[in-house]
Image 1 (tube, helix red, strand yellow):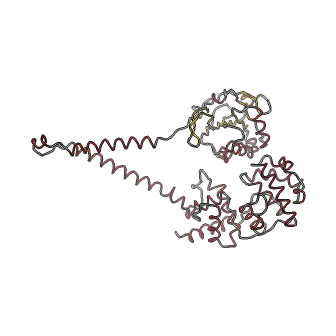
Image 2 (cartoon, rainbow, N blue to C red):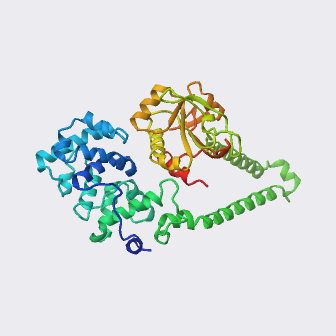
Length: 437
């Protein structure tokens, strides 16, 4: 398949089946959009849409925002990622709009990128969404999906942008940005792409290499293994053959061939041992608790100093998640993911509870900063952590050490463990739980 055929196939599919594709950020004018896009960096659109209504109500235009202080704006956006920097960028952006652009959001990329907090991706979003320009904004979803499908072969977002614009007709560039984002957000996921339901497999390089040819690769591997076994059997059989040379020759001439053969066997044995040692994979500790076990009772104070006990939740399902430490990147993404779907869990009769060895004070700062609506238990003596067997050896950046193993337990109304999640996807943890049967 040529690159042109791949682009034609993918674009035609989206044109037919997803004719309308738009940003999921809520906005009413260019000013609101540029604010929302600045805030959306490294954060979910769901979270931004919860933050912006009050912000836009109190600061409806660039003039009002320019007159505010970063500290004031911080209080409005404290639950998004990197709120300190974003507060400064928003106020700086508004001031530049007033002084350099008469309060009007510019339409040209080279002007947009001059604004504080506005990179090339944000500039492309504003230019394409507001001004309908053929600009391709490349975020993590667009970059991943276009490379996976084979639309691009890029090492940087800029390379990806250039390659996409080269092959996508101008009239489809702005919409294609949303096609790829939405496909990456809901189907072509970062860690576990849903190839089984993906409609683009006919044109996808990733599907062909990693899914379609998987059985074929396994078949070839089996053939190679069988050939290797035959060679070993042949060598063993040949080593048992008795030499037909006279006994006198055997006595006068050392059996060089036998010695050489022995050396070869020893060498292979040593090599095999070395390979085995090198390929030994570190296995992190995992809880011994399993599905069907009675969930250990728990009791501890939360971030408000309130004693929370498992006995308080009779008749309810519990999402009990253990995490290493407050305010770290992975733990923040995990907590925010559960926060954004908290209403869903409540409607489904679930209670969300986080547990770590941090104290109440640290929990409160963490929960207040990101507006977490659920309890974080301060298990400073690690009783709950040990009861659930989530303390053990783990590895990070090549370093092996003991700590809390990120694990989530889904406990039903009868206090029985229904699911144990050891492979936690921090950024998409809520979706991961919702996908359980």
